[in-house]
Image (cartoon, rainbow, N blue to C red; front, side, top):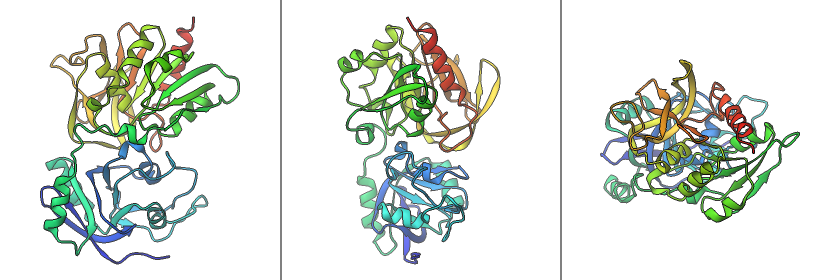
Length: 372
């Protein structure tokens, strides 16, 4: 197995530079630099469409221990712009492993780095905020590289969902007896979410992000699932019509991550950019109805705004259901009269804990209750 020894550099837009060695494919990677605190699940992280446009830094010190395989991807290929680790395992120890991390990254053209002081890098991002950056060979002049970083578009205002959504509709058959038909609005959906719905007896039709409203309304659906995805929710306006029209007809709507933000905005809510976002599989969230604390998987750089009274700002029809115990941000909401609810985190647990799988059952219960 080849293991690169070529020097590489991660340069941030504020001029901070981190040296290491090249990993994965040769070349230059540009994107917003964020850190992820998960201890496992690196293949699911690499293939999560929500990471489109981002260079992901893993805080766990060794990555690649169990290799990669053809079954754990959340999409057909890696979606990250770049990848940074402290140490990349040169071999893997798992009966499921099929290739090393380095081989996987090279085969898919992902520019990456190892040997980076990821603790110092994470502390810098925590204090200065997520920012644009680049991975490049160390011999590329810093001045030239910084120009490229500063010319790269910031995440605010970017609609990236159109680039990761399915180009055409496709379906998943229900496992066992078909109970419901669910439309999944694909803004960067992870593969596990439709699979969970199918395993619970739902026939799932996954729709492209640019599906016209009239087409959606023609579908005879029992529910609408609004998926996760990358970019700025303020730049994604096409979901609003379907959310409002279907919920007005009494069709349940369930959103996660970007879908949560799009539901809030559809009813008048506002979103804003977080300093460094929430990325990892260990975020505590309080469910207000029961007081239960869930450990959740998260991956988002934007959040729904609250006013001083802990209400969803600009959306009096929505109520708060879940709160992040790290920083008090909105983690869940529900409509006061319509069958609509959403969470900011990833209940499909790919990767992450399984504390929140009940939300899919809640969606099924809502569809059962709203059936004509």
